[in-house]
Image (cartoon, rainbow over all chains, first blue to last red; front, top):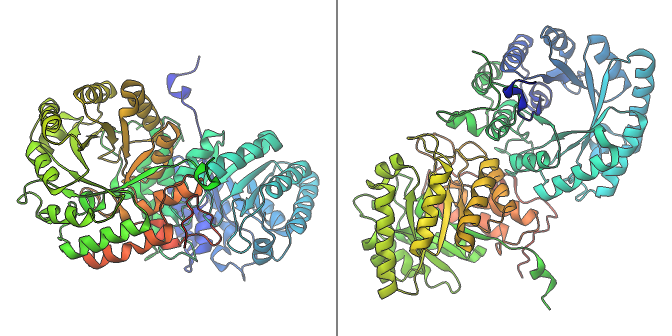
Length: 316
Length: 316
């Protein structure tokens, strides 16, 4: 018989700030600050963190020290250490550094794909197949996830046909990817669409249906998260303090704010395993490592309500 | 046979900024600016606006000119002109000014009720009965709505028993109130609670179940609105640019932002009758009338997505 506290439904919050957030800001956070920030995130109870990218340091100098960040993050037992990789070379570097899981970005929009990685979606699918063939031989323990960018619309191409999104997800699942998630890269998703597309995704690829990566560009981030939860999504990407902003929308936060998302779930009785006060405290090392960068998030401004009863009970 | 455009589901957005927003800011907006702002709101397609309060000008000098604002707002054909009144005297003044509808605030929390109107919930119920008795004799055309404050929790008293909220709603409906809505005065509501309480409200008082008045204090405003929509709520209060803030949470917006809420519904295919570009344009007279006051809202920062297809089609 389980203890009553474990009877609550659970959700996995995957923190992407150290990768998605830091690649979007102009300043480079020093290595020591990145490590202190990741320590604070782990102390708050986060169980999965995307700590960086294995891409050319010429393209993203902010993330050039990712291998060192990975090695530091691996000190936290029970923490899944993730990194983004754009290709086989990146996957090999990530595995050499010791990451548990890699995520490859594949755009559903051809226009976005060419702008982002200078390849068509079909070429990226071939790249993912190359990664999977290498994994089978050399790194069978490495988890491989794909996030389908611009799954809900594209600022370059406009609407993205849902049939194309689902066909791409099916091809990736058949190729052997462990999980395929959907990303609202451009902040264009709405709840009815989120419900429809994640329902179709699960119908198409079953348990390989992965994370919801939602943005709050137009304020709909948490409403979309609720919609995704309603149709069975159980992994959500988020960024502490909404770090990253949105280059084409000054003042608008980009990623869904981790603190607000965790509060949403904890309030609804869904256990995240995360302590809200410690999570808010993890904004301090972020702010210290990126002086002057704006931090977003409503919960941190208003505070946890007095007498709030979270779903996650953490021993003091 | 209806035109295809009218086949979309519809929702009523009730703009409360000129009352709820203006009473929460320190500055007083000049009468001419209030009128220009209301004109812009009506031009955007809003069909119901709470234009002020009939309370003592000593308590709320910002709203001392409400009778003049009402007279101006009545020039807009088809617009429901509302005002908040705390008592019979206010109701009589509102009716004399010509409002179509009054709203009375009744707190579900005794502690909040005493702090806000210096009366217990039971005493406020008696006051509502006095208003209804007067209406029956003197103002049968006047619609009477009650918003149940602190229905989802209270910063003074903590949790508010749901049974007490529903019992109060039943007593008000039996007394003859036309609509009873639920207000998340303190920004403590979450989607599971919103679904549960509005479902209970409709089971208890049927079609007298009224508006959702939601706050965005901790970022859950639109998620809560989605939850309320899911269980049949079809009227939502909101405030342009989230005007009003939240006195105990600096930097945190108070009321749900009208622009973001309208975008949520229009994106989901629910017609509001409101034109998003004209709604965003209505921020200009607000800003002009309250120089220096911070304006909130994500949609206005990011803009309507290129190629966006709203549910409401307004002839150019």
